[in-house]
Each structure stands twice: as C-alpha cells, then as structure tokens.
Length: 333
Image (cartoon, rainbow, N blue to C red; front, top):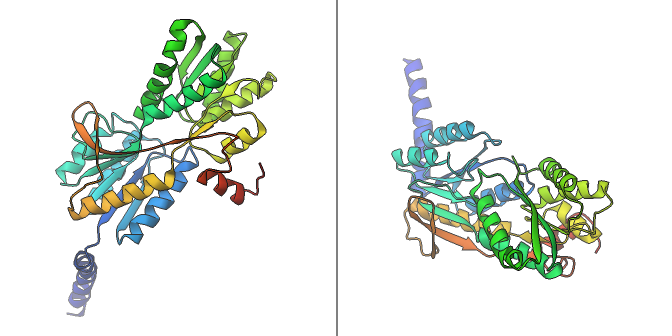
C-alpha cells in the first residue's frame, strides 16, 4: 500500500509543477543554436536567456556544434518536452526546413533567428538586413579604394546569410567593375566561419595574385585569418580588410590598423527582439512588430529586420559595442 502512495506522489509532483506553470502563463521556449564558432553566439545565448526569463518564460537551450542531424534530434527532444515555441539558428538553412515541418506536427511555431530557414512554412524571421551589411562593407572599402584589385572571402554557402551578404557586396561594386576601376581577382567561399578558413583562402589568393588592394571578408573570424596571411607577406595594414560582428579581435585589429572596418549587428537588439517575439507567439498574442516579409523560397515570412552599423577607427569609441570592449578588455584607442 505504501509503495502505491509513493508512486502516486511521484506522479502528482511533476503534474502539479506543470499546472503551476500553466496557471502563471509561463511560456516554454526552446532555443537551438548552430555552434559557438564566433564569440557573438555566447552573447546571443546569454542575452536571449536573460530576456526570456525576465519576461517570465522558461527556456531550454542547446547547440548542435555544426551538426545538422544533431540539431534535428535536439529539436525533436525539445518538442517532446513540450516547448510552446522553437527559436532556431539553423546549422544549415536548407536542412533546417525539416525542423519546421516536425515542429508544426506538434503545433509549435518556429522563429528563425539571424539566419533564414529556407523552403518551408516558417512562421517568423528575426535578423538584420544582411544584403545591406554586404553593401556597407563594399561602400566603405570602395570609398577608401575606388580603383584596385579586390578579393572576396565569402562565408559558407550553406548559410543563407552568407549568400545575402555576398549579394550585397558584389552588387554594390558591380558598377565599379563594369567601369574597369575595380577588378575582382579572387572570390571563394569557406567551408566554415573560422580564422583558419580565412587564412587558407587568403594564402591561396596571394599565391595567385601579385597585388591585392582590398579584401571583403564575410565576418571578423575570416578577416583575422586573412590578416595573419597578410602579415606573413608584410602586407597587413596596407591592404584594406572588412569584417562583421565587431568581435574583440576585430576591435583590436582596427585600432592596430590591420583591419579597416567591421559591421556591427547589435546583438542585444536581436536577442531582446527575438525573446519578446517568442513570448508573444507562445501566448498567442498578436504580433505587430513584424513589419517586413522575406521570401524563403516557399512563402513570404513575417520578419523583423534590424539595422546594422559601420565601426571604424574614427567612431570606435562612440559605438556602444566598442565602449563595452574598451572597458572590458582595458583597451585604449
């Protein structure tokens, strides 16, 4: 008889906790990241968790470490645990469509975070104007170097953001190319967002070209790798280099004169925006913030697209992110 009561207690306790969450209107949010190859993703994770909990939500977090199949299994596990909404940084923009399809079987909406999930019935997308980010890079470098040999080191082709970034970069400099002022002498995509890949492709570029005036790199990790390759040829500081994310290494490289600029996508803004959206979606409240739509290949997805900004040596101590880095790392301009 006693054992029956014990079993009953073990059954009732989790049930009571579940009912307590429901009574308090708590939304359970699943947050799936790709990996932590860039320092920015640690900040995204921490800010997203903080804001979700501040809004009264419960959160489950996992990272696939770049493994497509692992991310699908993580999504399945979260859905089985009863999440109300799934927020996904896709490991692969195409493959993650399977996560959306699975989530909808559980009647759980999906928010694509920063990177667009392609060719599926995606519910929401929170990101930046990624084509505009590429334009900002090309605009800045072309003003500094309107005539010369350019190289483009793109991000992975599996990342939709990389494709949009490349589109913005190349579309902007196309008129210069047509005039013959700019020559695009090298253009390749990396296998992953890493400094090692940036180094590998910059070495390949330098081996094939006697003179390079500017390098459009997809992010700061690729820029750091490119700078290391340029240093070996005593060219660091002589060749213009762009980046993205305003990572610590980029801020240091800009102050040292090795990197020309970076594009900062305010991490706090996207994390807070996505957390607010997740809670509203989970509660079934009307979404008024999604004022844009983005074509993901199957539908026009309701989107919240945020603005990015250029960070260079002249404005480095006037941007919020730069001030944070300078204080945190005891750096001086």
